[in-house]
Amino acid sequence: MAFKSFREYLWFETEKRRDFVNITPQIEALIQKSGIQEGLCLVNAMHITASIFINDAEDGLLQDFDRWLEELAPHEPVTNYKHHLTGEINGDAHLKRTIMGREAVIAVTEGRLDLGPWEQIFYGEFDGRRRKRVMVKIIGG
Image 1 (cartoon, rainbow, N blue to C red):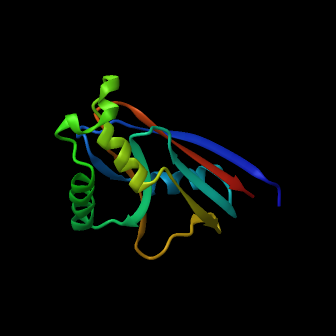
Image 2 (cartoon, rainbow, N blue to C red):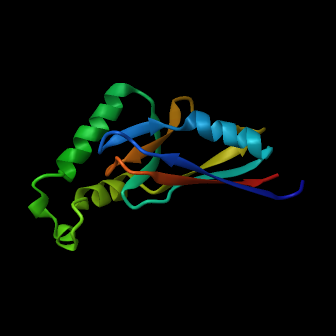
């Protein structure tokens, strides 16, 4: 089996400051486009205020994540963050990204994502309303 490498970028610009986008269908389409049957798929948020994570695609759970993250690192009062002395007001978004993670690596088996029964891949946005990218790198044969 010859080793192959495939890379493509996905771009996101959410209307809300915080949002969760199920990107599983886009990743599955890229697996098909790559032609790779056996390997690994890296999905990586390329911005320090965005995240990639895997969990259940259940609306109540996504609302729970949003509420929990806002309790752990509330956006306001903005005076709570030393980071804001730089002129940015997104210190909370950096902390939320650290909690939710930067990337996911998923096995590719028989040309498909090898996810658990309820697992879905999400793009988490914590400082939205501007264009950001996600790198998808698929390696294998």
